[in-house]
Image (cartoon, rainbow, N blue to C red):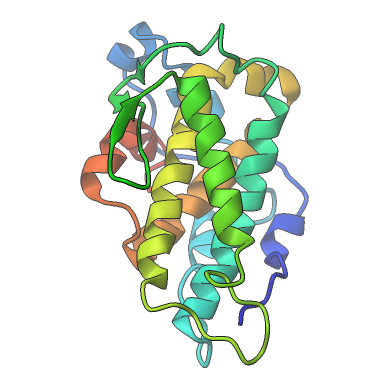
Amino acid sequence: MFCTTIPQIWRNRLGAGTSKKSGTEESREKGKAYLLDKYTGELLDKISKAELRETVPVPAGVDINEWLATNTLSFYNHINQIYSTITDYCTAVTCNNLSSGNTSFTWVDEKGKKIRMSAHQYLELVIISVEKLVTDEGTFPTKYDQEFPIHFQTTIKRIFRLMFHVLGHIYTSHFNNILELGELLVLNTVFVHFMYFQMEHNLIDAKELQSLEDLVQAFNL
């Protein structure tokens, strides 16, 4: 069983921080505004990246699966909340591309069949798929006498990979919408925390991370 309480860190007031790494001229020419200093320099108020990173290791006496479950649910909730605010801009018309940057939108169904689809279709399937997983008692047990399934950590890695794709699409295709909505601080904080957590627990393959490698470098993570 795992606790569904959202970590205290997400209740902190949002503000500004600093970052030493800046976006390159080449990236700016390609329209990657999210790499600029004035955007990557903004994090949580009253908390440093070092303090943020301290929240990701498994606390003493806590079961690893309990820790992964609680934080995965928290990340899903926050990323889904951010995505829900830009769904009016992420439509079958505006996001009908089959790829974005180094990411190709290919869905693998239950039979292992690969299906190329638009970004809009892919993200909708991602949200639906992850929602089913995190609300499934057989996968994320909440009762005291239940145990985590044998392949639970494999499932966690799949969820992190899919949610990373959502974050990637938001940054690369809807960054201006995020700025207009005043959600930059929230998005940046979720991203940095998400990346520190997956780095600590080795949840995403290096190949998958290449699509936002420049953003990781810009945040100096």
